[in-house]
Length: 133
Length: 149
Image 1 (cartoon, each protein chain N blue to C red):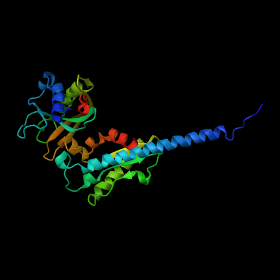
Image 2: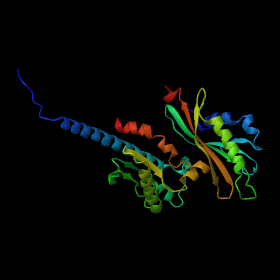
Image 3: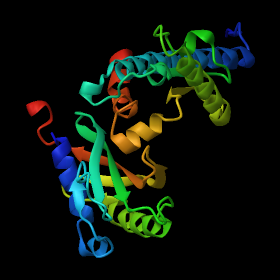
Image 4: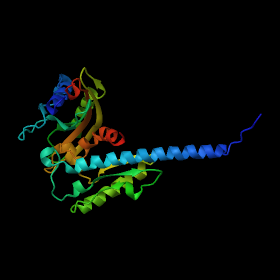
């Protein structure tokens, strides 16, 4: 069975590459980013996962970037980064998992006026030790 | 020599087959609805400590429900949005939203629609990783197998 930590590690391995890292001044964090970070960070977290033989999970990749002029979303950055992430994660077949882009990029404004762009993935993994058989 | 005269027509045969097919479709729809109700119960029962969301107004929890669209209709017995005693506004939003979706996607086939009708349901899932219905709907296939077996 893949835990949420395994799933995050799998997805992070897809995007933790220079093609993406060269485009941000922050880092890619599992689950949450440091609350005091004002850099262009990315977080990878798991919304839900089941424990079926073909294990399914929903993975949230959030692209963070400081607002422009204090209140406007950095649309250019979100556009560029979400496209790179989609290219790196859509229809990816690895030895033990598979990912598909479900939501290619949606911008949210949080309660503090900061903006975040979400790329959401469907994640699948065949459990070789299903029910410990 | 003898002759056999059937006591039924080709039209009768077609009618009986259609009735049987309709009954099978209805039974399958009913099974889908029962599995959908279990998904709804699981989603509503998930607490914040279990990765779900908290209850400030109960509207989000109340807005989770399902309905079955069958033969272009939504029979009352196939609407499942049980009252929680609180969050009635959310519950009504859920029913309205599910009906709206049903109108949009109706193509004649039986359709089970499971929703969280509050507009911020997606926000808490996407921004805070609070599971509203995403995790429970992943269990639908296995729940359906249990219902039909």
